[in-house]
Amino acid sequence: MIHKISTGRVIIRFGAELLVEDTENPSTPVRCTAKRKFDTIVCGDSITWHHNEHGNASVDDLLPRKNALTRPGYRGRPRTIAANIDQLVIVNSWLPETSWDLVDRYLITAEQLDAKAIVVMNKSDLADEHATDEDWRAMETYREIGYDVFEMNALTGEGVQQLQDLMDNKTSIFSGRSGVGKSSIANIILPDLDIAVGVISNAGEGKHTTTTATLHKLSSGGYLIDSPGVRDYALGDISLEDLSGGYIEFAPYKDGCRFNNCTHDHEPKCAVRAAVENKEISNERYQRYIHALKALENPK
Ligand SMILES: Nc1nc2c(ncn2[C@@H]2O[C@H](COP(=O)(O)OP(=O)(O)OP(=O)(O)O)[C@@H](O)[C@H]2O)c(=O)[nH]1
Ligand SMILES: [Mg+2]
Ligand SMILES: [Zn+2]
Image (cartoon, rainbow, N blue to C red; front, side):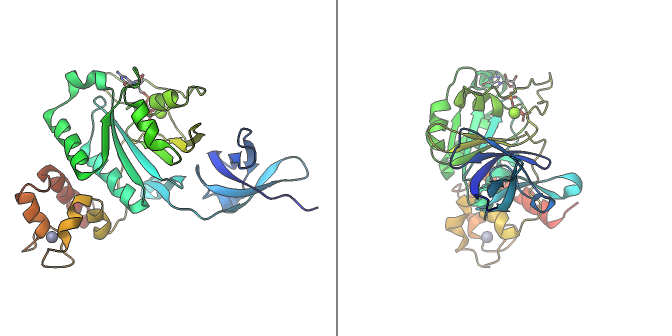
């Protein structure tokens, strides 16, 4: 018997079971089983699949990926979260408070993935109580570098239209700490769904409500991937080039450094450091870069 081979995109994975959006009939997801050799398939992957004699469906192949987002998992081994990402929406909030180191690490990852990055500050209602001058400066700096940066509020819908306009026809993954409001924002964009939303503790920590990355189709075209919140997001094994490549405002100066392998730290005649001294590059961003560089050079 010859099977009809279909294509599809992975919505969510539970063990050996995948929920797949069928390309020809996207409104009816198909449950597919995957053999052990397809353990690497994740949310967002494109696959081929077929119906077998028993009416069940199984995966035939994983199609080539544009990229994949990984996180250091158990024992530091990288765990793939989602694939074929066009855009990282880095969701932050005033409470839980924002780690700008974490935002920088996501921006470095976006460059590595060749994905666009958007920096969102959710819970604008909490700004008066919790925002610091350093926070506002950090946001202004990202804007000056060229990123889209804006405030949102999942309770009032502020900023949602702006985000939606940037998401048309792209696959965007919501990333950030637990409790910042990723699923709350997803629920406004996808009102027909009812994605579980958590609470935050008195200390402002999220409770890791979302546990598995899930792909959602947008009516305007494009996809939204809601993903579990991170406690921290480590970079894993990256090269010095990838690290400094993630600080996109260094790029126009690099050619002016005396050494072409300049780390922009201690080397003489470093054009990046000169730009920091002239206030053309933000010193706070530069200090975060140096901090990350030291961590890369002297792993624990
Ligand atoms: N004050 C305020 N609270 C918000 C806002 N957006 C979300 N929240 C609340 O923040 C809490 C956490 O929201 P979630 O959407 O579950 O956060 P998450 O980022 O999906 O968290 P994880 O799934 O654990 O990663 C909930 O109690 C939301 O009601 C906002 O704009 N303002
Ligand atoms: Mg969530
Ligand atoms: Zn340099």
